[in-house]
Length: 317
Image (tube, rainbow, N blue to C red; front, side, top):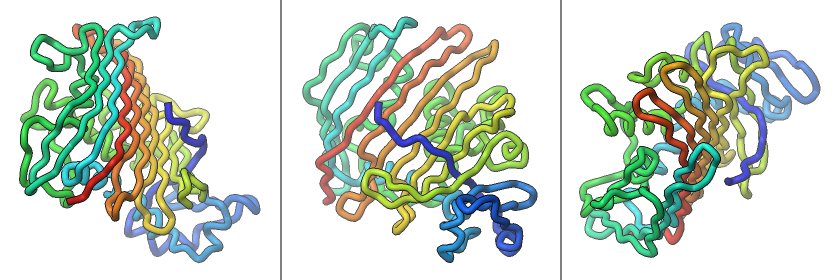
């Protein structure tokens, strides 16, 4: 698993608070400054405050980021090679099914297509038609695999709201995963009991979480590390940690990690996701993604799986 740094970070603010934020800051120690916004506290190292940053604007930009989503959309307009690994595990962490391949995407004449090489599978990962038997594999394929010739795509980010109404089964689950993946910290409709608990921006969330912004080095980048971590007395939460690294100079996301868990009678899950991104030939693109998930739903059984994709040899045409 990719070993991202451990940390703690910070969160958002609303436009109408921009004018009052500077007046509510006070120094806690020489190291940290507590900023109160509408009675919600945010922690920053004093050095960030003293550097003359427009803190309200900086936090607002972090909250409304679209570079992460755009990076994945950009995969549709470039050629690249991906080394793929998927494992399904039993309750004792033994591998019961696996998938390994090297895929190459080509982009020509406004269309993309994919070839598969070095394919190796074990267990019941695929059915007799070559389709994934497990939801984990189906989710992976929806993010990284191309079926046939796909044309007319771009990486423009307009309204990035995702829609689950009218979708059922795996299509609905894929849409929810995209919402969770590209809009972490926002409400997700259609997930019983926990949809609202995923919202890390409302008043209730501030009762349960600490928000912190730091400056750190991350894989050669000078970054703002923005994280949300539960308070010691937090109750009935779903997000156990969410951290994003933003390049200080470009404000592009260069890393994201989040951990979620929930245990109830209807279903339970533990999920970890990590993504690292780099700017390749002027385009921000994901280069490593790692997912580990353990979840169960009544009547559907338990699924324990993980996948990793390592992307390289990007070609812009």
